Image (cartoon, rainbow, N blue to C red):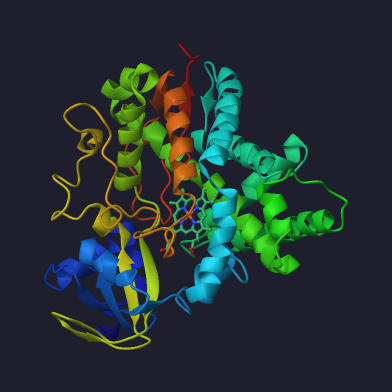
Length: 409
Ligand code: HEM
């Protein structure tokens, strides 16, 4: 039993998002501490120095960093996430060619239009916000990606993609359902890529499908990367549902978000991604010995970046456990963009050089338009929906609870 005492995978199963904090407390409370992951030594780090170390390619590699059951489920075969060095930068460039300021604006406009349409049907109804947003984001991103398809088909694929993300905690029935979702989404994407390459389907120049189909990736890897654009965009629905929760919990912000400045919406959006739980950690493998106050992490040991602990690091954030969007506003009401080594819901460091998420601008833009729409609707959380579930990974708010929505003002 003693051998399992500080085994992170077991702690995650037992304590969900509180796992790392509990192991840290049990080990004396230091920012960096030693644990075990899948039976091997793991250095768990948080805070700015932890982020710098985790993203230093001299010390950390991503090869073999994500265990296969999770890697194949979440990211797919041959994905950008597991590449290092030049191969990684070349693959990453594919995503920068797809996601730029103009394309993010286009995606946000598509989402805004569909949200407007969908929210009119919510009048007086009880809706599941997560499901509604999955459909809205899914339909928008399928169109934005240059994939022509029926609305019902876009909704079906959006549900598969949401299932994949819902299973990343690798627990209970969510995991096998997620695996089925991955298989179906992967086959669908491979068919789309093949049809495009065969000239049977036309993708608008510059669209995700066009860029990916024109690449020299195999059909399977091209399908993987197409899903790596679609899946995480649908996954913004996890934060979108939290946005509904945050608005219900902080009604004093509603008029500021419906009619206020872009800066206020952006500050609120930043705080949602800092405060609400989604990805709990990132795993890497030590490439070169890391000497730290508690010892030495050796080659092939795990290194784990504590995302939640960094986003709530008391050495960085004032009252880190309070939900306070004002922390991202300066005295003149302008938004203060968070530091890339202190704010890591999408990973940290330089997005161009490391593995940080290239889709962060899309996620932020989607959340901002969602906040503006939701702020003009009455959202009543059902009984029991005020707690954010922290045992289950990924958490969802408000899990399975209905929200009474009323017509836009
Ligand atoms: C809910 C919203 C999202 C969250 C919380 C999120 C989070 C993350 C995290 C934590 C990483 C890993 C960073 C690392 O390994 O250092 C990542 C990587 C990635 N994300 Fe996102 N992401 C989101 C949305 C998006 C969107 C909308 C896209 C694309 C349109 C996207 C595409 C990617 C890709 C391609 C990578 C791999 C980057 C690499 O390995 O270099 N993500 N994301």
